[in-house]
Amino acid sequence: MEPSRDSREFYNAFSGEVLLEDFRRLNLRQVAVRELCREFVPRGARVLEIGCGVGINAKFLQSIASRVVGVDISDRNIEVAREYAAAPNTEFKLLDVLHAEEDLAAMGPFDAVVLPDVIEHVPAELHARLFATIERVLAVPGRVIATYPSPEYQEYLRKNDPKALQLVDETIELADILRHTSLRPCYFRYKDVWHKNQYVHLVLTSDLAFRGETASLTAMGRIRYRVRKRLWRYRNGAFLKRVKRRVAKTDGKTG
Image 1 (cartoon, rainbow, N blue to C red):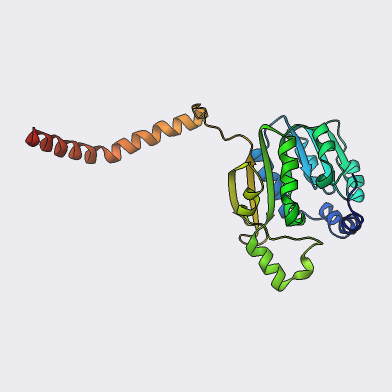
Image 2: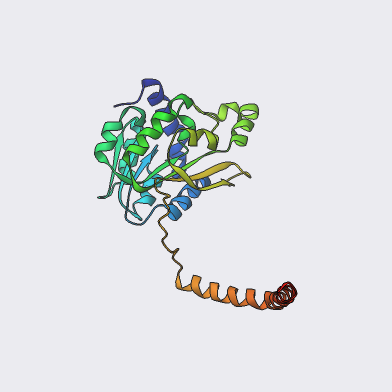
């Protein structure tokens, strides 16, 4: 389904006034999104990007994913994205995810769903619907990779620069997200972009089940572990011997 007229008109204008400028400048916020995706999007994954904008992140995702689907509520964004990031493994759709659950389900499942500064632009009362849709299209195991302004940054903007806020610009707390989803957090941190603690980077997973598998280490990781283990034993050897002698004496007296 197509987005509402007000939202479409706002983001069509936003596309020309703001997003197209990212082809001229290097947007550090998007750089940070791509770094997060590089770490948490598995190679060969099927990826859904919600709020794909003009396709800059999607073009990066092409290099690590087997399939990329970008959706946006702005037809201008989709038009630019199709021109900029055209590739055999990538497609762009004009969709409002809040009203397109069946369409997305038909395209899924997806191993990763990316929401780059999207959640705050969805009305809070619709977050439950948003995450219900995401959970339906997310594979198991699967990851949701989200970025959004920190609550403190949103508060600063409301007081000092309200014109910087968009049509909908909610303050997002982690607790609010977790209240609307059964997905569990596996990564959370405040991210410095242009200012300290300006954004939040969050990764949710559909599978945190404990199965007793041994954690895997790289060859270099195993070498580092052996070196650290020997250093640890060396530093604590004398202390351990002293404690064992004391315990042995105590046991001898009580025996």
